[in-house]
Amino acid sequence: MKLWPVAKAYIDTHLQLKVGAAAQEARARRRLVYAVRQAYREVPLYRRRFDEAGISIEQFRGPEDLHRLPFLTKADVQANFPGDIVARGAKLDRCVHSATTGSSGKATNFAFSEETYGHYLACSLRELSMVGYRPWHKLVYIKYSAVPQPSAALGPLFRTAHVPSMVPVEEHIARLRAERPDVLIGYASLIYEVARRASDEDLRYIRPKLISLNSEMSTQEQRNFISERLGCPVYDEYSCEETWMIAAQCRHHNYHIFTDNVWVEFVGPDGKEVPPGEIGEIVITGLRSPVMPFIRYRIGDLGRRSTRQCDCGIGFPLLESFEGRADDAFILSNGGRVPSLKLLNTFTTFIKSDLGLMDEFKLVQTDLGKATVLLVKGPAYRAERIEALCERLQSIIPEPIDFTVELVECVNDPGTVKHKAIESRVDPARVAASSELESA
Ligand SMILES: [Zn+2]
View 1 (tube, rainbow, N blue to C red):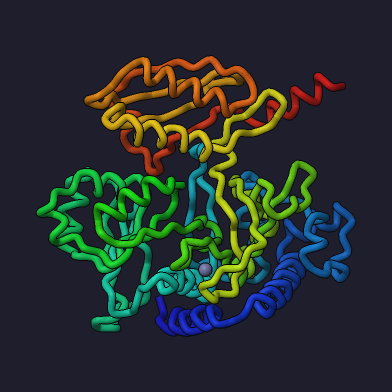
View 2 (view 1 turned 180 degrees about the vertical axis):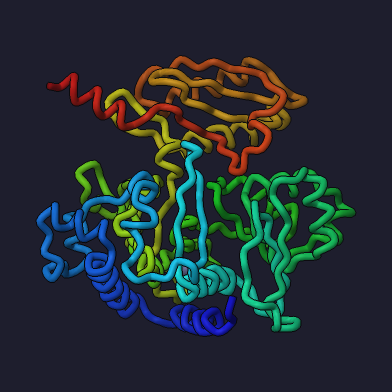
């Protein structure tokens, strides 16, 4: 990979941190209009769909017209890659290729140009720069596979090391002792385990200046624990494989939405933006990937927009809160949802109030009105406290749930890449369809 596109993007993305809120929004709107029109002109899938929906592309003026455009789903990407979803004339053999697997286990493939990839890499470094990373720091990330980097001809600058995620925690600790990271990046559950299991002796060598958690939602309590144990601030970021950075926490721990990379909508059941402060489904439009545009992509998360401004001086708007994966949320029989983070926080409350109650847990909605709590007992396990926990869970779910508690040795299947503490196996489409039938 060439160095120049990354270096150029590095400077460009970092300069954006100096741009005020109003100018930042104006730029994002222009990029959005450009991205949507370009997708229509160059990508067969969008041309076909927008035509079918009777959309005149020249009349697309900006965010206020987004709700008229059809959504893009993971299944659409799978069905149309590469033929219909890649821009005409794009040279796929010169692109960076990547893939993701959903809960279905089916791979979704995608590609972006070297320039786009350079921008993504620069954006992920910028997220760290916002909270104190400098080019002479050593960055160590725990990830499933290594991230391709530009040729390493930079001597002491931009040093990075990869620790594979699929090894036991003891090995993570040993590798981190050897690598001595200044900045540590990785899945929340893995770094939480490192913080729990590392000895005081280990922590004499593992002394990062900051930690950035990614890929999984984490609670404030988990982040506080990691921060206390490893003696440095812990920040959270929000990204996806398809467009990379969506939002990240600044020094004030507020999530800024990177509107130079993505346009984010928070939509209600009618497909239109919900008012700021209300929970909506997060729908993103990539602003930087002309080779394979993602327009109104449903990534399956829930969140709330903020109208606050942050004192840190960064002009990117704020994400008020991230409510977890939409497909982890509990589904109600009327099609409503209980965000997974709310359920997760109930567990955290008990873990804090009843130390040693459980070592690990997982909550699975197995069907409408049914859930299983998988538990690895802790040294101070008491069945009646788990009953109280189920009662507390019930109190935040507005319809009766039949809870089953199962004591297990391990809550996740070995080989699972992302660990989900809360999971729903109910298909929301099925519920929506059956409630329509009932009302018909
Ligand atoms: Zn801020």
